[in-house]
Image: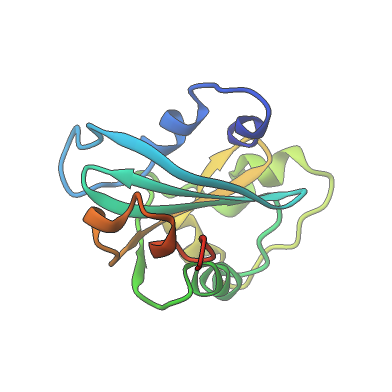
Length: 150
């Protein structure tokens, strides 16, 4: 499960990334974790450099709507310069692992749209956003949203 990343290094991150549709087949060649943050006890954010592009990976167990997801990315990235990456396989909300594992889960009105972008990892819905940030600046913390500022 992806959220175990906070406690144990596993292949969960690679497994989840393989659930997203990248531009080229067999496209994930290089992955660098630039930042990992526990946002709340049940939500997590990664800033990744994948094949010379900066991405943000967001995981949370309860997602009330796609507007909520978009707000999280807008706030975290500190801009609207990002685009969601589609899931390779759209899984209907009621069959997703975060719903089937939990006792109660309210179905969002936009659950069909959510299925197009969400990958599942245990109890979490996971979303990937491609940013417009320059890969050449990715390793410098002052270029990262919420990163070190002098």
